[in-house]
Length: 220
Image (cartoon, rainbow, N blue to C red; front, side, top):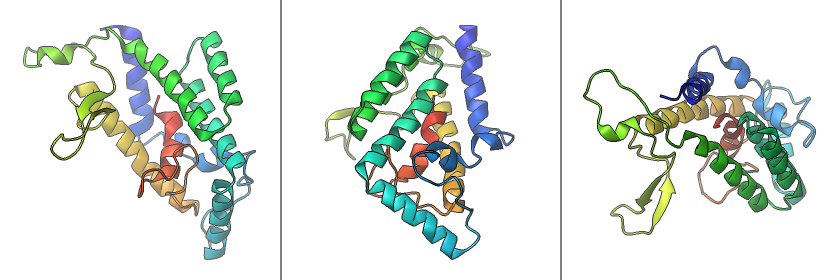
């Protein structure tokens, strides 16, 4: 097993799941939107009036394309910094991010940075006690799985992280689900609507878009 990636991977899983990691979730909305939308002084949901004021500010920002793009940039910049790229690579991605004009542009930069980050796991190997583990578990197949979509596989294949085939994929999915559940409670406690996000917009009905915005920097 390559030691450095393994240690870093375990640390990131611990950061997402350990009960002692409260600081990673403390006021994440305020931290990510600070300086873009004036949420810095927004109180927690002590009264219905405070909750309404916070949501009105959120909806105002969601309705403003400039604010939406600016907030999406903040979210992706935090994720890129957390990915610990080499300094020249990080600077290049951040420069591309600043040049992004739309949320689609921002998502494109995020996807390119994530692709580079996942490449560090190429040729990553795992060891298991005993001989019961299948041979295919001993190497890293990648984060995403190419799988035909639809209930019967009648739709074209797409890359998805769902229904993991490898233990590392399953661990990643579990950690992200734990983080998402905790973040949902934080977002609601702050009086915000979890369904109205910035980087993750309303393209998928019913998605907790703001929650996924807040989780995004923790997914690297």
